[in-house]
Image (cartoon, rainbow, N blue to C red; front, side, top):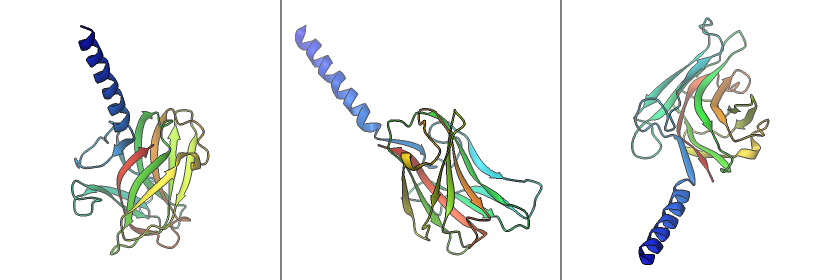
Length: 193
């Protein structure tokens, strides 16, 4: 009986550590299914500052031809901030009150569309249940896939990581001044230890 108990205890310890290894990365959205919701059950979509202003906007689609990796989909964002009015729009994604306090980085893959053109920089926001908004300027976007890995402590304005509510990509007429219309692809959003 003691041997069975010892074997069960050892198995429980192995499973505990295996669970911790699996939790080294929390995949928020890999878009591999080509459908909503994201991997943690959150909705997402494009948003526009002013739906009544036809001179600006953002459209989101799943794209199976341009993906990071070999399968699935990415998110294609066709944005336009070339407006006589103040213009901003982008992508929103619900984070379902995710506790990211045990993670050190926010990671995702991004690339611009060489044919449509693209801005080399976009704004990123992460929001929490307290109403805090962490901000980060993503720069150096190119026509090739690249991983953006942001230390969570560099999200200026975000002090509490225990209940994250939303991930937002923002295109605005000031940040995207060099290319006010274009296409950006996003894939494999995750929190990493």
